[in-house]
Image 1 (cartoon, rainbow, N blue to C red):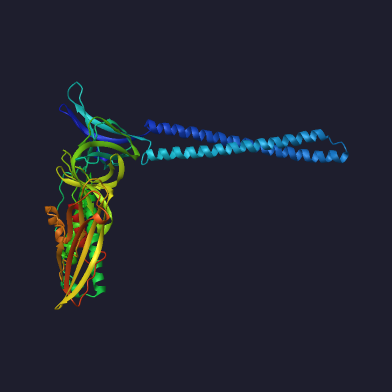
Image 2 (image 1 turned 30 degrees about the vertical axis):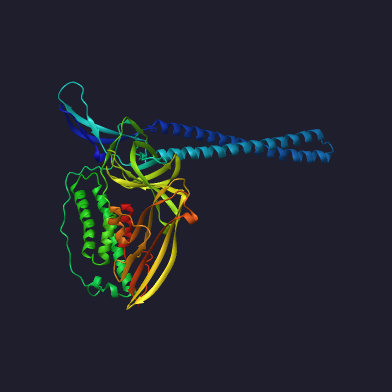
Length: 553
């Protein structure tokens, strides 16, 4: 990025100016690319040679055709005059056939060789294209003008930014059966296409956005006006009695505002990430774009009543602030300028972990193995993809969220084939009490354990959740008490999620299976019926709540 180029010097030196220039070169400066260029030239040379050989074959074929055209009339004339030399005719015919066969075989060989060379040339060219995408045969130079007051050696530090250089976190998580911890390999998938190889450099991986803007932005006034209310009054107050078409129009408005909010977030991030602004015009444009984006946020806030407020909360909960971290890698590292990703090891951590089994019979019979891992290292972990291994066997892929130092996170280790759980609907009883309807339900949660040891299992189920009221939900008798875990009681229980922390005996199955029984009652107006919201669109907060609960686990 030419405008980012600057130089600094110690006392005794004064930098007068720094200039950037490019110089065309006859061949690519990188040895790897020069080797590919040489291979391309050789292949093209071989193809040209084949082309000339094919022309020679074509000329020979034409000569044989002329020779045949000469022999046939001559033989016909000699036959007419009774002086035909049969042996000469036979010898000439044999010669012509042999030459045709030889030419055909030679033409086939040249065609096969040509096809193979073209495939090889295409492969080498694609390889070069992968290495030199956005790359030109130029050398970039910095011209530094300095004043030097004294004799002796001195160093000048040249600094600049490059684009086309990125990295993403990647993890390998390994655990052993019965272990009290896990091993986390923290890697970076680096990709840089700056056009210059980084050979033997001190590499630092950073999440900070490089910037060379010294001035802070200016907050512009928020201009608002009044307009006619399209909804004829307080929309949030009217919502319960609106017709279905009117409700769809309202939802469409909310979706439009949410789209504006997300677009504004993206615009704001783009403007914040601008590295260079050298003139006033660029500064004014950036400042205006940032204020325009922030206006969209406040527009949603001003309209945030009823469903709008829930939509705003959902969007804000989805917004996560990134950690600004720097990982200085030990030793020297080399990262070539090419398009494919290169793995760089950041750290190898041994972290304490608490293993558990999780069963959700309502969502499937599988019982999942999880580890609650504490990041007691000195570095923060960024969000990234994971590859998980148990006893050196590949288990599957997952995701690590952003984890600060001292924070816990969950890693899944697949399913335990020796554990199984399912849910049984036992009964439903209904009766009327005055103007209300009371419906009682009974369920059984059944767990099998084919292991030779007793296994602790965390079991989940749920009751209907009615935040808007109108339905009373009462949990009745249970064979096991709900978990007393404080985090569960805070984040999950208020949403009618049930959790039991139980032990399943070794060999429990069939008649000896571990069973959790519970019942609950619904009470509501006898003239109404229960309806389940299938997709959560009528209450966007449900999806946000689910995301919170995923984080809370």
